[in-house]
Image (cartoon, rainbow, N blue to C red; front, side, top):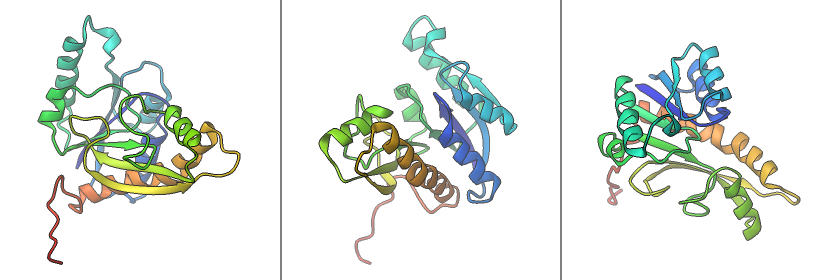
Length: 206
């Protein structure tokens, strides 16, 4: 399975995928490229160190969003991906891409969807909102991407307990370590080996 990873920042989830492919946790998979929407981010260095083709395509480098969307879609096509992984990618995916790659795009979100998700919930904002609400359990979710924001079918979730004295930063770190870095590689491996199919109907007879 040809996997293309999209990133915006440091790339800790990207590193988890690279490591999992390297140690055999993810099988039947090749990371064919890493694309960032930001220049000079460490995720590009991670890709470079792993010998993975990497490049930047940023909305800031185009006169308007429609021209970026066209260039972005064409760039994805060049990699001929079987699966596109959003690993902390903070750009809205154009509808033309969602339509073309329906069932072939997944995202990692740092909460238990449907809690603390949707427009405006990203990065530390998710964990800040969870702590302000006083939840005792948070976690992470891997889901397919559809036209909504964090509304696609859920693949995997993992819960993480909130601890007394947690800050958004400490909760973010624990959720990454205990949930995100585990279930994102697991989901990719499941897709690569046919264990997950987009919108597969549930047989209620069993």
